[in-house]
Image (tube, rainbow, N blue to C red):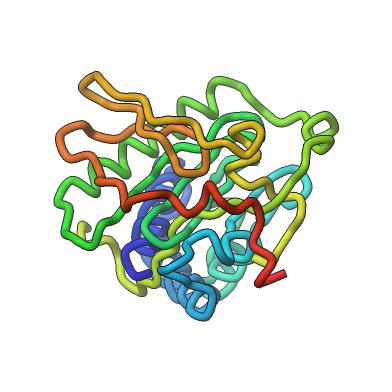
Amino acid sequence: MRDEIAATVFFITKLVKKEEKLSKHEIDKFAAQLTTVLFEKYRNHWYLDNPSRGQAFRCIRINKQQARDPLLEQACVESDVDFSLLGLPKEMTLWVDPFEVCCRYGERNRPFTVARFDGEENPELPQQISLAVGRAALDYQSGSSSDEESFSKQPKAIPTVSNPNSVYQVRLWGPFSLQNPTKEALAGGGQAVPPVTGGEETASSCSRGGSGLISSLEEFPSPGTCPHCSMEVCTACS
């Protein structure tokens, strides 16, 4: 859980830094507090033997229906940082599950992988997360803003991705909502999209059915058969 949370916090703070609205001190305070908040939230909802379980509970989401994610807002309050100055996108979903962190910009784009873990140290992790930040920016600029009215006609559930329990920075440097779609649902019919291979920068398949930009030099190894694809929504935490 430590690695997944660290990757999540690092990814979010990279997005915040790009906006240049907060000082380094403010960003550091926010990052430290967010790490603590996520750890406390996820500690009893982390299942290594069944990563999909609890994914709705662990999902971080901002959209037209929920302009401020409760966990991000809590971290802002406790670090005395103005949420509006984070500069985060108006539509963003983060799935934090064991072994994987995925993100989606907009309500219609596919999820992409932010980081994957296999238990071994990966020196390329910072670069890979930076690539994910770049991918997020491209998705945001592509203008696939949500049409909540039409999108809401599809079944919705909360997404999942491996969730780290780390109160630390990446060595380099809430609540259940039926409005949050599972990554399986985003892929269409609950089927995961097979990974795409080839190229210097490979579009790596997210276990939730999307694709992410991963460095081909040190691509994160798959944690094995993805347990996510066999479940649509976690009911344990509802």
